[in-house]
Amino acid sequence: MNFFAFSSGLVSRDLVAGSSVYFPPLFKAVLIGFFIWLILHRILRDWMYSGDIWHPTLMDLSLFALCVSSGMLMLALG
Image (cartoon, rainbow, N blue to C red; front, side, top):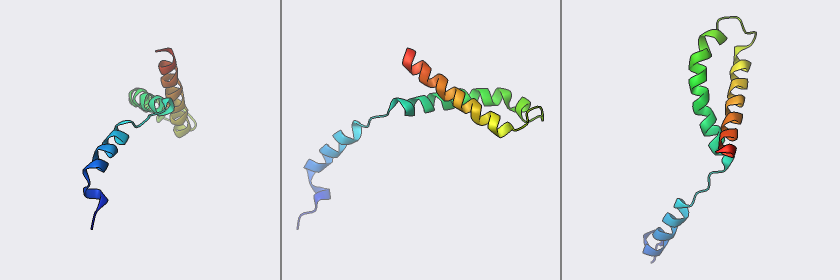
């Protein structure tokens, strides 16, 4: 009775397939934009939620979209 999980040939092929994972540029832009958003959100949080802005959640979402766009721009130019 042979189990494929214990054969030594499949383990090395799985490792090679696992190390060649492709991250598309949009994923990288979202990751970069998320870290930019974390910094900007921390700076602007008191102002956004003080009552001066009509809908702070929409402002926060649009700030995130701008950060992802700037992350994509950084990837395209860099």
